[in-house]
Amino acid sequence: MRILVTGGTGYIGSHTCVQLLERGDEVVILDNLSNSKKEIVDHIETITGIRPVFYEADILDEDALERIFSAHAIDAVIHFAGLKAVGESVHQPLRYYHNNITGTLTLLAVMDRHDCRKIVFSSSATVYGTPASVPINEDFPTGGTTNPYGTTKLYLERILTDLHTADPRWSIVLLRYFNPVGAHDSKLIGDNPNGIPNNLMPYVTRVAKGILPCLSVFGDDYPTHDGTGVRDYIHVLDLAAGHVAVLPCLDQPGVKVYNLGTGIGYSVLDMIHAFEKANGIKLNYKIAPRREGDIAEVWSDPSKAERELGWKATRTLEDMCRSAWEFETNQN
Ligand code: NAD
Ligand code: UFG
Image 1 (cartoon, helix red, strand yellow):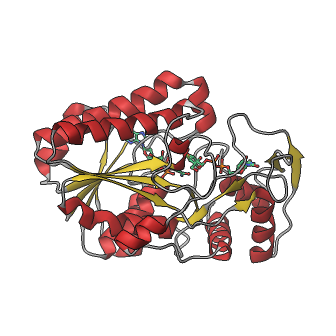
Image 2 (cartoon, rainbow, N blue to C red):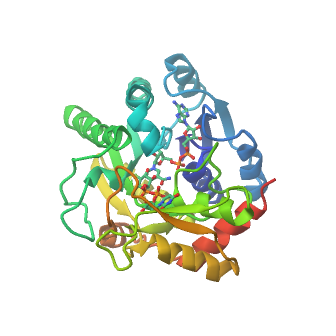
């Protein structure tokens, strides 16, 4: 297939591009580089031996999208492009709604004009809000999002579903990711956010390297096994493989929804101890107050993806911790 990957130089997008190229798909990347670097295209080429077509462009730029769809007969889009910092979204809601929602509306309009009606969308476990129980399956109610970032995902799921109702030719897959961590074995691509990381694992690796002085554990008074927040951490290579696994769904019109997680919850302290053990490193950390907007625990029931797609996460927590550290130590 010829696949347009928006946000393809980002963390999850770059790992997915590698797997698409390795199985013989043609990949066209579009990214405005707001949270990634152009060198990622070189790294993808080094890993796969194939250079993807790359456009430095914005999903808000309709003319640029027109040019890309006119130059390439795109069969399907995997749509990663978006802003994703939860805390930042609370302070900059308009920027988040504009980038994520207007950007996606612009993309969808151009796709429609070019008779390309197949899309895989990066959604998030955040659409479940504060779940009544865990693990969460796809039939759990969505809503009750606690920040504008999460609300953009919720609204976009709704917009895409409405689009299919209006025009049943559309094939839409909504992938609800849990917490991706880890990196490619080449150590060339991984989670490398610009600025101070918001997410746990890139913060951990930067503390381990001495770039940041100390990890704050946000809260130790949650109703969890050790009082710290519990999440479903999934190796980014397993998550990328989930995108390859759903591509056959695009042959049938409809809207499909899948959780991509491992089904196992680990606390922040579990993660710290696993990282220390996997890499033989002592981490400097302290207990800090709860972070606004956080919930106690969330993990997935990923069985629908296994049943319907034959996809299952296979990599261990040790794999995640080791590869994240190897990637960090390979950075300048
Ligand atoms: P990332 O920031 O590494 O990648 C996103 C990419 O999109 C970046 O390269 C950025 O430059 C690009 N981008 C942003 N706005 C754009 C625009 N207007 N036009 C063109 N490019 C634009 O993030 P990621 O972790 O790879 O996440 C990918 C997707 O998955 C996002 O939509 C994110 O919301 C979603 N997601 C991520 C997580 C996570 O924990 N990483 C969890 C759930 C969902
Ligand atoms: N945490 C710390 N210290 C830090 C960073 C995080 O203790 O410096 C804790 C958090 O409080 C939470 C856990 O580590 O308990 C994970 O936090 P992350 O920020 O890594 O991830 P979140 O679960 O908050 O959110 C992530 C993505 C969202 C996505 C969600 C899906 O950032 O985009 O997973 O579950 F929607």
